[in-house]
Length: 292
Image (cartoon, rainbow, N blue to C red):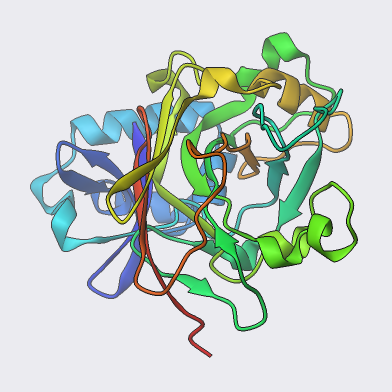
């Protein structure tokens, strides 16, 4: 099942993508408004795994008026207000790193970085050397603390794509000469394009067997497989849950593979970034100057 947020006729809605259409969940079952408001994916996930099963039933029996052709709607980021955006740092072999960390390392992005498919990545006025980082991302569906690795994937509602856009000008390597992530380089407005939807866990047999491709202006720049991740998702989830209780709506970015050329491209106004991850769809965004 492909859960989405979308805009149609000036309203933000919740839906499921099926065969080129979106099934508007609240039109399929108006009583859902008592459980969660249209467009509130976090609230939907908080209703639990059993509710996702109800949604599958709604799709099968959806009336014609609940169907909206995909081309008549605008897809939005599948979660507008994630409870956390947790990003795994250096989780793929990188020739620029002399030594990989012995345990997972994380940084965070702010909610304000979220933007959707087709929305522009804005080039900040105060930063430069902006790069693309395509990442398979887990969406937590079931809360948990001190989760065992063997149970970790049962806490995942599904998967989506997030582009971990980064301003190299504001990395610690540039600013103080030390290795390590620096959150402010990662969390300018629009620096977390996400989507196009959440593919539920039952449709992805193995999240670490997915092809990842990233294009810039139609030219392939990154080609990899999520199997190459150093720390797999069960390890990341188990490790994080030792620090805090994971909550429905948390996004866990699993790291980006290095570009084919070894060095990333710096984005310019007019560029178009396209990320394809097997089973998760396509996330495409133009690049534009800061609007302010």
